Amino acid sequence: MIDKTTYETPTKFKKVSYLGEFIKDKTAILGLIIAGWFLLWSLIQGLLEEIASVTNDPRLGYILLPSNPFTTNPAASLEAPSFHSLALIFGTNFLGESILSRMLYSLPRDAIVAVIVVFVAIIAGSLLGIVSGFMGGWIENVIMRITDAFLSIPALILVIAISIPLKEGFNAVIIALSIVWWPTYARFFRGQTLKIKNMDYMQAAKLNGVRRHSLFFRYLFLNSIDPVIAYAALDFGNVILTYATLAFLGIGLTIPIPELGAMASNGLGYLPADWWYAVFPSVTILIIVAGFVLVGDRYQDIINNRIDY
Image: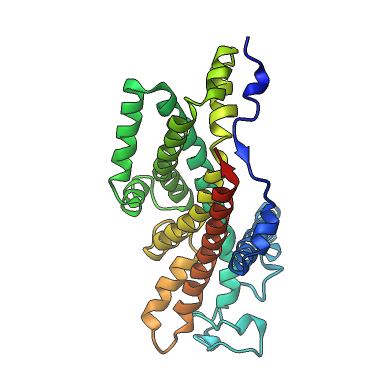
């Protein structure tokens, strides 16, 4: 009988402090601050907006904002950025609404889309990738051919094609992105499964009668999750950028709720004279995406140095 301790610790790791490694890289710290602020603000603001909806008290939705993002003021139409008022730091749009307030109000939707889409992609991708890599044969061929079919079409085009039949709306975009986003994760988990399934500790687990669902989760999924988390951090930025692009094209909007991509699109017609209308929402998207990229890149470096098969 093979001793179960022979496969309890299948992967050798170098001892690494994640926080310590992040602190060594100033750009990673910057990315962590950007991504952390974005997620924290989105959580707080999103909860306030939800409470405002439940209680029918819209004031709760903008209690932390410089001003009501839906208050129009034709007299202040396209007012340039000014430090005389917090609400006017980024100027106003053509309706006289505060661009800063509308940007801050819109951020929870970007976070919700990123979290849901990446989570669903990891779950679906891990299931299909691990099953195909472990089972092999016709099952692997079918799953991988479907994966290839999805990957052969640009994600943005496929999302638009799926969103239109579902009708425009926020939920439709989330569904469409979730349907499109899993193939990369499926390929990744399949590759990890092919690498891991013939290792000694996997053979020992099989001989000791470990059930298949335990093999899938405990030995294949968990031993693949570290690099997946690193890629997911990068992918957060990709999802946010894709969602902003859809909003820029007018897909997935819920009038009158503001979206960064739609704000940038609306401001294009006012360039270059009223540059702030399009520039500030666009730069905000860029900064948020860059923050997740910096975190993901650094995390990948840490994982690559830590894992030692």
